[in-house]
Image (cartoon, rainbow, N blue to C red; front, top):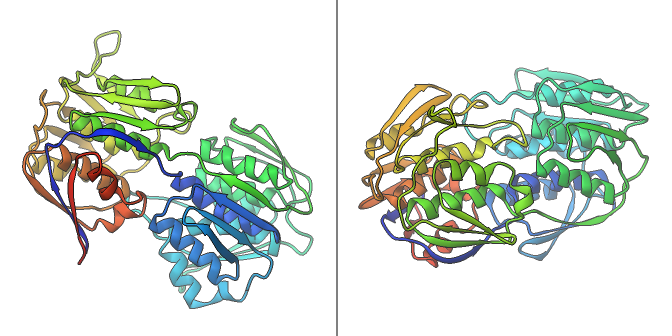
Length: 438
């Protein structure tokens, strides 16, 4: 199990570029299955989740050509549909949650998909009902084999057919799968309560450039008129907003002066406001964000004087992926804040490690924690930790960077799933992080 050895207390200084968005990458890579023509995707992050999904598509028969490490050409003109029934496919797809988004394209274009129960972060219940129900409403038949733990989705011989559907939850990956099924379905599909995150908007724009007909992009009401054929295109990923938030948190926690470059401010939603509410001093400079945090920060209060609450919500609300980061940053602020993680019931369980580091946190239940800030920099003490998932892992890294002493973070492969060369990039800014390969 690989580890980071982190010497805390070192401010960051300089500027950093943001890599392409992981969540968008997983969606648009799966969308290349919808056409036999070439699709080129650029600004791909060099992270394990993206590499593994590209490898999976390659084994399915997709022709993959790396133009550069971050720009890849895909051509799905000779897919091996027998492979998706193999044990090798089941093992590989099961290890990568992003593989669930091959269902919509496969059913839409080839009439059938087999999907093992996917893995991914252990952050609580992550049901797939929205995916399956949406495809069923388009006419697909759904079955589950409890022995092999695989799902089988089959389209009727006449193909998928558009319809109206009201989603039971605004699932991002569920919405993506349904969109990719609907673009080749016959007739009009209306999706209400659709997720409308920037990643979904980007997927829709890419599909439109391929010939799809989608109205309502950016809203929770999408109208999709199915087409018979989609062509090739080129597509560039947005910067990863979660990486933006991670670097804001690192700069605040270490009392740094950091310029975060080309973040696409208009696509960040409530994130800057959330950090400002816990006192982080950030400034928008064109399309960049500067964090200049040489003084300790103070948590804001609501107008009526009540304690500040930070909660996640579907877009345009605050992304749940940022909650762990905001919680850590709040541990050394002046004041108190309630952190409310509504969407996943296991995402706050990493706070026991922060308690070991001296943080003052009351875990009220699986969804809520009260953080009582220490009111000074370097208030945490170093410790040994194990990363349980991507976002808790980077939150632990932020805590270690701001702590006194030297911490060890194990299972950093989880962090590598979402952050490209995070240690070397931070070391160039003044951090002291050693990677130990085991």
